[in-house]
Image 1: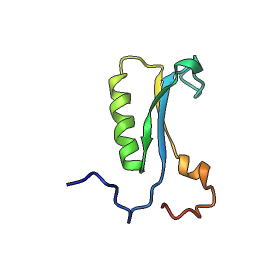
Image 2: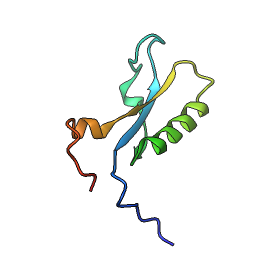
Image 3: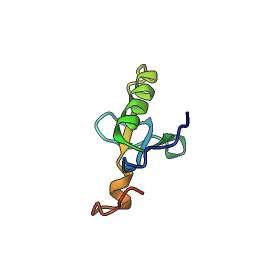
Image 4: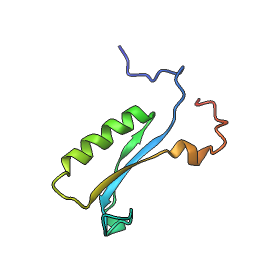
Length: 84
């Protein structure tokens, strides 16, 4: 059995990042040098699972926030990529 990706599914790159915010009312990080790169994921479902796990692990700090970035939209804003 291999862990080869299913080539029938298009890769929709998602990045999960996070860190401590200056204030709770705006997504401005307190210290950009401490922003955490959680990972890059091939679809939203995997990114959401990683986001949820990391967010739950930092629940005691109200200023910690993690975000899912839809990188595939930044790379190909018109959605013309075939995913291959």
